[in-house]
Length: 564
Image: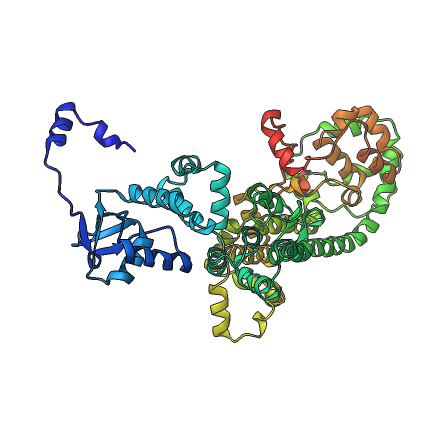
């Protein structure tokens, strides 16, 4: 490959460089002056080695190995291509024997390319040897897979397959090198988490399983992604997703399967825990709200006559902006001994309905819902979970996670034997956790903090920092609306745009019906969608959250396809 730096030199300088005396390299060398280079080949067939020893013993070295001056400047030469000939010569002649050689000045990249070409041309290297070479090539190309494939002379598909095989454990690579397993076995093992590969390899070798039986065995431990109860977004490009494996390997399990049962179980456990605790919080909130709802039943009955009087004060109040003092709910004055006049309105002394007055009545539900939303966000993002843990530790609130929240799950998160280990063994186990499993543990810790931290302000600050959107997981429903009086329902309908959608007179007419009928008409208003509308009572700053702006079709389409 032409050196760009050289082509950039002026013509006169290039000409003088060509005329400069070139170093003269030896054509023969003692074997003791030759050191092994970074040959991608690791396995050499013993039978072919014996044949090479016999051939060199009879005829000598007919094809000189390719060397380059040792990069470290030592008085030696590094082997670039011809390691089988070198090994056989060493056995025939010993370290003092001399053999013919070809010496060239070569960069590390040129030496790597020459070694790979030599292996491809002479004796096909194993797939794992090609995989290791592919990793080195990719590093030399700064991660550019297209360029690495071009330099190797491979298709992009072949490069991707070899890079996937590079994730095999050393024992599996050795077994493939020595042809104790087939490529199909190796492709199936590459779909197994690294910490389970050696055990699976032992089973294959001990039982003498062929590729078909190995596939059936692997299918027994896979999990169906279609039945998963957790968010599968990050599963789309996971190497343990059989859909990804199908693209890479000829031998793979059925589509829609997860071949990492530990990760699948952890995610399922986390999702089920969040769901259970959400239901528990909602039930508690409902129990807390029930007495208040009963106490307000009288108020609702009083609303009806006012609604049916035909006066315009209902419509006017819809448009009225709350005053500064509306934040403070004032108690109704004690009943007068003198009976009110016939024209007086019983609602005259009622406190005005505001966003904050409603929010104060919804504190339990709002906080429980936001805690769950934050926990879900942290459970799916290890980076955000790590930030949460560090902030909690540095602010002295990490200890607020309940003692049994994590210890009760340690066996599932780390390993079944973990709870029974001594402290030193636990340290060792945690230090050797695979990166992906460690990320899951961090996510669970972060989610636990979101649910257990005492101060809700911390939850709110984290939710803002990580841009958690409650509209992704919550929507106005009947249980939410049943918490409020008609006046409060009117306020919610107005800020969410339902009054404008229906028309003020039409809404005022429905306001005169029973509360249950009013709620039903609100939820089922023709042409009105509550999705994405977040009442101020449920937001962190008591400000109504309108639906998100629609995304342009060309941007949204790929996301929809992936989600499907």
